[in-house]
Length: 399
Image 1 (cartoon, rainbow, N blue to C red):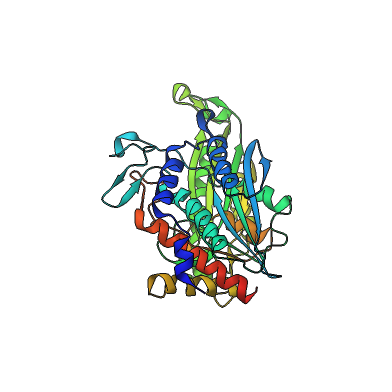
Image 2 (cartoon, rainbow, N blue to C red):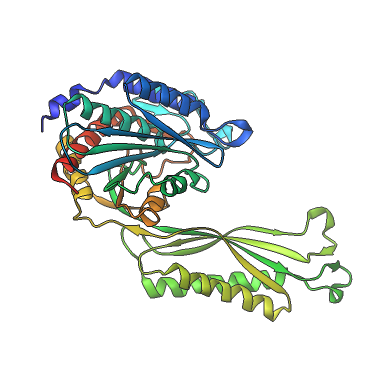
């Protein structure tokens, strides 16, 4: 492998300007904004390089797939994955720069999505281009540019449903992980518990059935369940412990505080680690809610909004070892094996698409979704080159 020839295929200044343009292009779903503008920009670059793209829809949002045949004979298929959407910028008073300005200051490129994950999208494109320019390679590279990762991951789910990962032997998700190679990710379950009682006047509570005491009992029961769960499975480095977190409570209205609420809802964000069976945990959560409701003489239901099981790829697989070697080759140090504290599109691709995944990309591990989000400018070329080296290694060694 000639690293110099791979590096020569990356125009660093063009890569920086390309990433700035991505950051400056709004890709929020709110206010009519979405992935369409950035998808159009990406398609222009893809076609400029002579690549052919397939575009498919997921919940009205565009997704892009590019497949490059290496021309070097039979071999495995490696996918790079990135999402085009970003979270909202939040409170502008907390920003010291324009969230969509793509400003470079002191070696950092600032803006919403700079780390999560437009720099990863840019690096995977330019890394793949560098591999192509270096000469024929065995097998294929597939680029997955997906929508709605920050929401319900409809792009990844549609990619699986449409068969775009059926022939893939491994996927590198280019999310920011601060130089860690992460072959393991926490699971996540989003739940809503609804309590149904009887509304009544606040002066005559005996005529109704207040749902809030039942919710309070459920919250205490769920807190106890979390403690029990942690005792059962323990702390699982590098992921940590599982958690059951109440995040939203809805009941009554402030302008009707003299009315006992006949209905209320509790939303839960559950995070899991290896050793936690989602089906069993959902049953236990349901029992906590139903018991609390029954004790108060009201009804209850639990609805699963989304279920994303924890996933793990062996650290000794060809996919992970290729990335470990590539990082060491480019940077001169062996990277740490880490874990993803949240979930990524890789969760969907691995669990539902049955393809091994590993998460590794430019940007700090904890900077995503923060004010003054940034990526180090030097990370762009560094990661593009690492992706090219990893792809060369994986495709030549086979899956």
